[in-house]
Image (tube, rainbow, N blue to C red; front, side, top):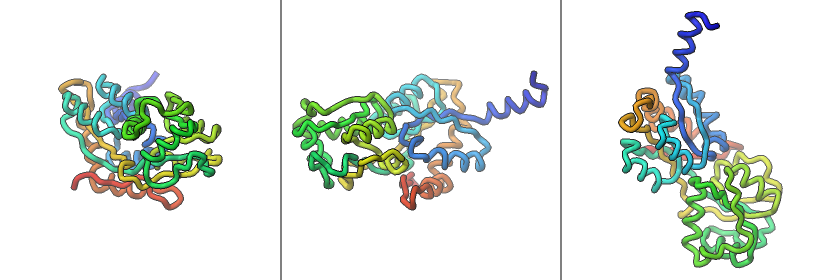
Length: 260
């Protein structure tokens, strides 16, 4: 059994911890492993990240099972605020999506036009691995398909894995398929096999992340003070500098752009 000191210590730890519902891209890119120790040093608050597809992370926050939401689907985030689950959405950082595929590029997609690339994948029935998990990346992919005239027929190679970004990249690596990825997870991905970045630089591939404190009016159990400290830190000078400082092989993964 814990003595009084142990109980007090446990209570202190519990009081100084929050749950952040976020995306697989922020976790699998390694960003949180880099950021959270910095936040703990600054605040004394522990952060438990539950990494899901953005749709599932938003659902988790709607249920009140998280104190903070940190995701990348602006339309869904704005609806979350409009529905009263948060008072405010703040922009944090951005990176971009990239089309990954085999270096030989059998569908001839290489360039800076994601819509033209998807049309070629569909018309050649080349394998394309879709996340299919209502994540921010999946939502972006579906937006891009809608911009093509082949949305109703994505080709016989189109497959939904219902999985996170890392597993989707693994499937593409083992099968020689194409996949849309956030750049951060790709840069941190070790099992690349014959894959390479084929489409990048299209302004439509811009990938913005937002952060929201879950409303205590909806869910009284939300740790408002501690959650607000995290939001303030990640959108403030120290957090923004930490985001800019996260690099892999000298390449910056995310670019801070919180409103000054």
